[in-house]
Amino acid sequence: MELFYRTLTNGIRLVHHAIPGVVAHCGLVINAGSRDEKENEHGIAHFIEHMLFKGTKKRKAYYILSRLEDVGGELNAYTTKEETAIHASFLKDDYERTIELISDIAFNSVFPEKEIVKEKDVVIEEINSYLDNPAELIFDDFEELIFAGQPIGHNILGTTEIVKSFTQKTISEFISRHYNTDQMVFCSVGNISNEKIEKLFVKYFSSVPQNQKSNGEIASWSYKPSFVTKKKDTFQNHCIIGNLAYNLKDERRPGMFLLNNILGGQGLNSRLNLSLREKKGLAYNVESSYNPYCDTGAFTIYFGTDNTFLEKSIKVVLSELEILRTRKLGIVQLSKAKNQIKGYLARGYENHESLMLGLGKSILVFGKVESLEDTCSKIEKITSSELLETANEVFEPSRLSTLIYK
Image (tube, rainbow, N blue to C red; front, side, top):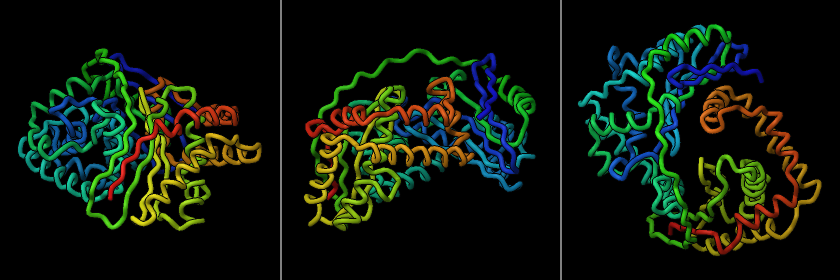
């Protein structure tokens, strides 16, 4: 995969992958998320993402929303615990229209007071909708449990009380602290030459004033395993079992991804899906996930089941973890697991919108983009002994936390 790079004097970086085709994708990824919020700011990163669409120095909200929609494109944004992204999918002939629009809303938004008032109600409804969905809510509650006392443990939406307190001052203070130009990457995948994308990048991003990131405090982690049950008015019991895991730069991360995929990844032949659903019929939804962050990570197993099946389901899950802790994968098992995850990775590279955002994230975190071949090479080098060691560290029973909604 051939990539084109450029860094402006203000620190904003460009990464572009030229491909044939009519549809293109681009976006601005910013290293600012909910974990950067102060105690009185919970939810502000996500709220700002909403407000970026509410008016700039030269556009009202309607014209922002219509700018790409009128030509068959789509403008969107998202917030995670560690980044905010503004991105778009559009026809290749509308590259300049799209880049200008993203630059305008990222750097010229005015956050009208009346729009702030309206958007508070919208976000509060989003929070209420989220609170009505225990299968989603339990993941954030679990991270609050294992990341107790750390900003990364807070959910992205914030709370109703704090959202109501947001003002133009709250917004501008967060942006001033965290929308740093050396922590921004403009990423692009589409049918445009390197020369043309560079020209447009310089035209619409070089005039942005430089705002470098200051060194922040490094979080110190103090994890204490917990077993918590919460009463919820739900038809099912919802359960998460998990532990802290490796950060984004840990060399054991590829092995952890492989192990997670074996256990409860997206494949229907994952061990948890086969044991809990296919063989015993104890659950409909069952999955495991591994979410690495810049300085820590979280491993979780989630399932929903009837109250009468809860204890039996937990025993099945712990039994599967015990097998991975005590039995090395055979040569054939390991080969199949590697081929499966390499296939998933290859399919992800063919999803050009996902690839575009992945390029931006990779530059932010690692300062480079690893090729599919290099990633697959790392996977191929993973041994059964390494996986056994990882399983014994992350799946150690005394280190696991459990959260149950009854």
